[in-house]
Length: 139
Length: 124
Image (cartoon, one colour):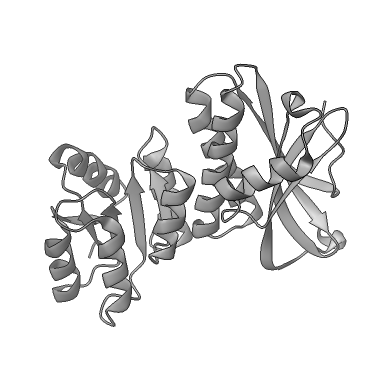
């Protein structure tokens, strides 16, 4: 269950179940692995890992099981990493308020934050690879 | 001759653990136990890499990193910050101070440290 990704996906496709504090560490590690697979620099891997851990901490506070998905995305010739989580507890909450809260906490760590979906509201964090261009013939 | 890493870490226990990790991949490790000692060591005998703890007595790791990156003798040396505080603000502070990576001291720290050394070209 997830809102439709705003961008076409590409490998890697990873996911982490978040249900206790140990999973925050695993989420952080998984983000680093995904970022490494896509070729992010060490500094940007650190940013993505920290943003994913912050997202895991946030959903853990609800007390419900969540699944954080990490996958590559393509936007034209750009490649990026998308981190998403379905947040049913945010149904009916103003998207603007959600985005303001997320941006204040993790806005400096990622390039874009989106909050989409009426039935399955989903938070998307995106970081784009600079100077790497997607060529479909290479896949 | 083994490549030399400077580890700046005030906890002797943690310094020993990190030293063991770095030595296990063939690196030689010098340890400085506070910021001023680390800055002196880095300037007098520049290493190929500096692994820097955030929480240090007298001068924290962010200050040490900023000074390393301002000094022409040391500004080219990659700095990996190791920390128990890995929240969003701490990560941003570390990277803004000029760190090349910011790694939390968790069960994956050794693996991440070695991956970063490979990416920086210090290990094959």
